[in-house]
Image 1: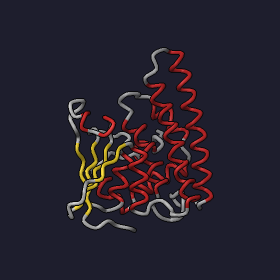
Image 2: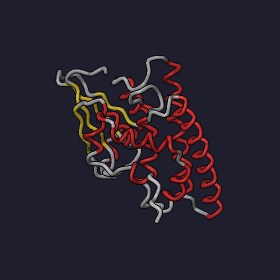
Image 3: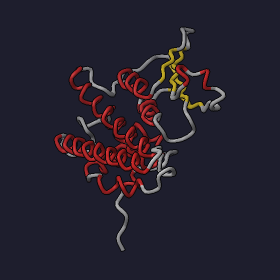
Amino acid sequence: MPAKVNCKYVLRYFDRIGVAEGSKLLLTAADVEWKEEHPVWPQEKHKQPFGRMPVLVESHSDGSPDFVICESGSIERFLARTYGFIPNDIHQAAIQEQLRDQASDMFAAFISQLVAKSEEDHKENFAKFEGLLTKLVEVQTKQLRENGTNGYLFGNRLTYADIITYAFYKIILVGMVKRQANIVDVVRPRLTAEIVKLISTIESDSLLASYMSRSDSLAAVVRPPAKF
């Protein structure tokens, strides 16, 4: 795995599970020195590029200028490429990146129905969310089966696609459950055995052990409830 010498990171985001989850997982898997900062909001909004978070700051001990980047997708792709979690082949990389973009579209539809002003808008956006979720699950499951149902989407080791798939389900099913209590009952029945295995595989991956030990388990949420 590629590594940057004398390089460390600060990830700025709110103290919650949200769109920085993928970046946290990538930093952990890369085994680099990093820490979280939780700026006071909105008082420190003006200090962030574009007034948004997450923000990643890469600093170097040689005194060279800090590298600062914002937007969750841009941060993820930068880290994935820097530390070898995305293929060098542009076609293989594009296949993984499109899975991230589809998951992002699904999450955007989820947020739209959550903040809808009218019942009509809520129903329309919720139907869109369900449609995108159903298609995403279908595509992910097909890829997992074609890869031998080993718990990874591509090959036999952790990749960007695995991390982002896990992250988006965790954002919705763990991070957003306080805002929409029934979302687990909506999403969990749609998840296939292959996706549940991916989630368990990610949580048991040795590269992520240090983060999983202090984070809520997604595997416990997606596990089918016991029948009595």
